[in-house]
Image (cartoon, rainbow, N blue to C red; front, side, top):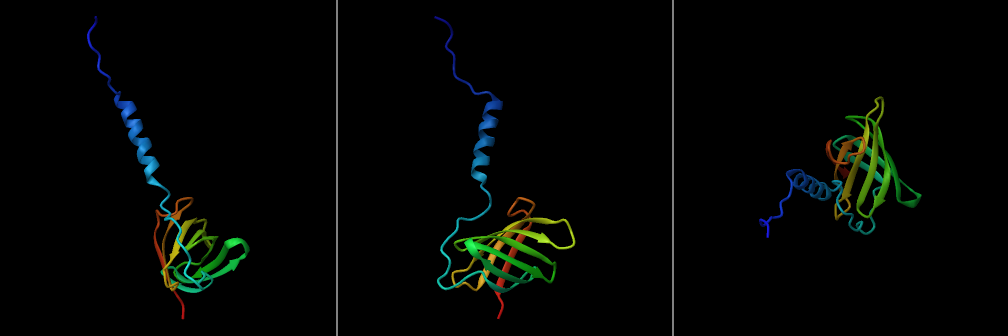
Length: 132
């Protein structure tokens, strides 16, 4: 009978397993949608940290809008429950990205994040209150 062998894991294999498990947990940064407050919609005028936003509803849960003030641009995307998932474009530049806004339970505030290109949350906060 030969010497007893113990099972070992190579450092490379252990690193790969750790990396894959971390990537699986990272997620997209987008929260799970909840129910939209009764009688409320994203449509309307909002005062945001990027200026005034005007959002309109389109068929099929689509939303389109503009923002003017600090920067000028457009947002376009879809509503999923209390979330507005959108692509933003800044006018006069080649900058664009993704973002999301979640409606508050009373339907009067939006809170979310924006990011550059295909990332939803690497740019910063985006918030708004329904304009009077």
